[in-house]
Length: 320
Image 1 (cartoon, rainbow, N blue to C red):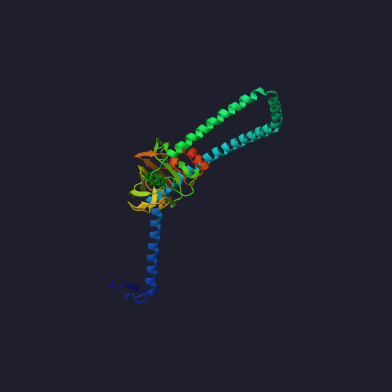
Image 2: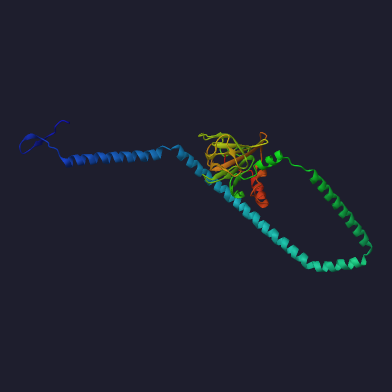
């Protein structure tokens, strides 16, 4: 127990021992608790103002990149609107010309008919020319049939064709989400030109990443470094074809696992050397990088593929 406390009594003119007081202990406890709460609150505010965590730094860099990408999208949107206006004007001119040609066609037909009646000597020569062209077409058809009869596909070739990575690595791929293509691009960190080995597809964090073809997982890497591919998966499809899916948030497969085309293998993210959530997708053929755009076939129409090809040729800034 603590030492006893004494208080001077002016009436009795002597020191008297202080008794136990519930109110005094309650006030002292409240004062200590108030001081502790104020100290904790001040320390928390100081930490938020001065100390920046790695998660806060990552979110700050991500917000900065998204603002820059918004500017790029606005510029591309204005260019697209200008191109659409030019196409609309050209379509109007073409429609006008076709309409005028259709109006003038009956007169032209009457003139050609009268000239055909007058010029009967050239009729035999025209019939002979048409006959020669028809014979040439028949020869080409027979040659094509002969080549088709000689064409044979073995069982091994059939399996290789099935395993080709022809499915887009994300569902509903469209040109607007294709940020950067393969080739010489601007590095987002040092702003210099470098060779971008794959394509960058902008995706919300946590989007399903799909296997582009049948195969086996030949490589898995989990990394916390803010550089390189980050978390990535390699799938071997046979005959020298390998696909790589980089900057993932999480990985849902194991090394050596057999993968089916369209299977979810992970979730998109921004791990490694990435400035915004996206998927960096590569196709490697016999150890050399190929253009993934050439293999995006399943579920992609001809018009969509032309848009992807045009978007991939733009030499802009990549996201990794």
